[in-house]
Structure formats: structure tokens, C-alpha cells
Image (cartoon, rainbow, N blue to C red; front, side, top):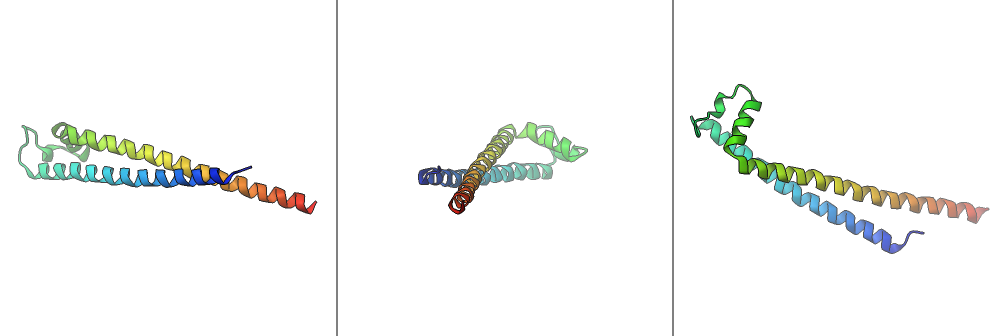
Length: 118
């Protein structure tokens, strides 16, 4: 039997995970914007620490040069992006648990209806 407390806990967990995901998403977006802004500013410069971002033959090479020039900002972006993926996973698990409770409750209703009719 599913209790009211189980239902409340599942929804509270879902709300918490949604809130966590939203916060992590904002942080990751800001870190990415900051890193990309640094890259664009560097493209404008003729020379930064002896390396020219505009010398990169393709976006991958330019990205590699930018990672060398801005390692702290790149690491911040990577960490927040990883946190965002984990947060999304946790949110998905919470959604699955809520859906599981819904299905169990529906099954209980169906089985109760069959026993009431029988």
C-alpha cells in the first residue's frame, strides 16, 4: 500500500531536483557565456601570449588555443557542465519515481475495482 507520506516525499524530491537543475543550468550557461566571450575577445586581438586564435585553421584548433589561454575559465565551464548533466540525471530519476508511484496507485485502483465487482 502506498502511503500519503510516500507520495509527498516523492513530489518534494521532484521539486528539489527541479530547483537544483534550474540553478545548475543557470550557472553552466553563465560560465559558458563567459568563456565564449573571452574567446571572441581573443579573436579580435592580434596576439595573445604569442598565440593567435585567428590562426587556428578550424574551430577545434581555435578552441584548443583558447583552452590553453583560459584554463581556469574552461575548467569552471567543464565542472558546471558536468554538474548540470548529473543534476539532469537526478531530476530524471525523481520523475521516474513519481511516475512509478502513479502507476502503482493506478494498479491498486484497478485491482480494487476488480475485487469490488467480483
